[in-house]
Amino acid sequence: MLTHVPPPNSDGQSSAKTTLPQSNALDALECIGAPRSFARDEEIYAEDDVSDNWYRVASGTVRISKLLLDGRRHIAEFCFAGDCFGLDSGSQRVFSAEAVGEVALLRYSLRATERLIEEDPRLARCLCAMTLRELARSRGRMLLLGRMTASERVASFLLEMSKRRDQQSVFDLPMSRVDIADYLGLTVETVCRTLSAFKRTGSITVPNPHRVEVCDREALKAIAEGETCPTQPQPSMMLRDLRLPTSPRASISYA
Image (cartoon, rainbow, N blue to C red):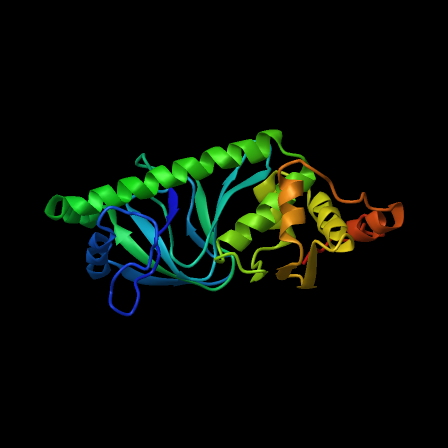
């Protein structure tokens, strides 16, 4: 399970404007959190590992993924600072977790968390509310993967990333284009072509491979809702975005 817990402000109180039931109960978790650091692409836990801890991101980005039977990778979620993950319902991990870049985490023991819940039932209500919010997000992702076109998926992804940055127009994308493709259920070529189409229509600019500026939020919303679609790439542009190798030994590199 994944969710977001807003960090406390300087007075130690939650800065959330949404209504978590007595959310200051989460302050009790600080005494059982163990700091952990991970390097780029380092594994935090693997599929089928024992699920006896859960985590909160202090800084950096974590990807939650699963390797499918046919060898493809499905990324279920990206977790940013303040997000929690690893609250699995069973005794074993269904997904794996890896650091996208340098990551600092707080690790919480499930047993210690259960003891705190017995002492303060408000914490149980907080964790329940967090789980329900994640269920709502999962339903939205089912719609994205099941019904949306490629343009709708990429537009929805950019709007989601902006929303998780407090609706900022300029935000970082620490993950690679390959990560984005595995998150959206698309090929990396399709992601690159769609971003190029958005740039040509003026909906976004891309100052560097890991930063995006939303120039026309309403246009992206219209695309995400299926009301319009960006101009299709010209053949020359499509070939440039594909970055095809020139020999069987050449590799494709995407920023």
